[in-house]
Length: 535
Image (cartoon, rainbow, N blue to C red; front, top):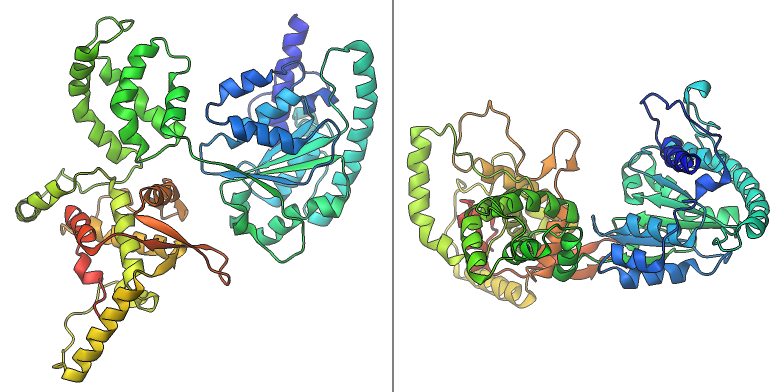
């Protein structure tokens, strides 16, 4: 038994060290890598265990097993896509663990350039582990895709020969064990991050055509992406991978996920009754909800002396009344979106704030639904993108902010007034215009920075968090703004109006009325009329 446990631990460390350079000191106990390191070894699980581990993913699990096919069956490349925190990677790895198939896993998040990605794959196939004895170097140095193809073909041939001999030996020694087969599966995670690499489009085209270039039926390729397949469309002539979509978790799925492994399921179920529906309207990412629910549940249990109690209806109402003041701040903070600062206000700012609050107190009461600050800015940005011509974005969102109202206005003639009325009627008949996602995010970044300074703060020396949800130094999304766009689409504030054949990207259309947009803007003290184009 001690020998088996030590081999399992070494097997896990071998797989991780093959993909990432480990700076920790190497353990004293080690064993030379074997072909069993390409699988989970003796840790195979049943299909029922896989299904119970992933609530709401039953159909995706069966579809993935069907696409994998029986043992040693060649398969076309598979693309698994969906939003963040939808279980894509975990389902793939657990299904391979259930089927006991050899695989190589590399993530484009840790392998952040082509050389590290290529060498990570080759290290695992060549059963090479970085350690102090080899100077933590890779088995082969590989910079070019052409070199990677030759080295990959050679490494795969050696692995397949080893698998053939290992399959015959395992049938004689362990007839009850699932055979590994003679195929190797290449799992590439976070493929969408390659788009940000230097020459990323060329690397993507190479990876998508890798199956046709190698022409080795013993290799199965599984791509995991956060973006849909049409984003990678190209006219290079490669075979399109088979898509498998992982949708966002439903409210019932999230309930089953959070109720697992709870000490008191009845108490936690009462807590979920109080908070889950509200938070599902903002985000459905499991890690974000788990972080928020852990702190809220501690607050929920503060009035209780016995955590093993089963609450009745009266106790549920009292616990909810105690928790209610803490829910709204958590809803606003879940995307790390900064609101207007309350600390260090000057007297003039407080006076101006009082005038704003007296005007908007009635309007704020009309908004009978909760929405995070960043979602409100996205709603306004979508409304402006649908109402304003795209050619005016540069003048609308310049450094001065908004249209210049100081221009001399000529007296309109009857003919010009008539043309203006006809143009307004045509605009009403056409409805809101469509816009790409890039334009929405650009307007969102501009108006959020304007809204953050709408109270006239003069103390700009303090560093504050960017309200747009962007990290300006790295130009990356700090929070999942794309998930909020998806939430607005689910709530029918935005609709997808198809994809442009020239741009190849999905276009959106705002379904928000001007009255609602004005109410949302007033709740943020944002000057919407200043940025709205009037014909």
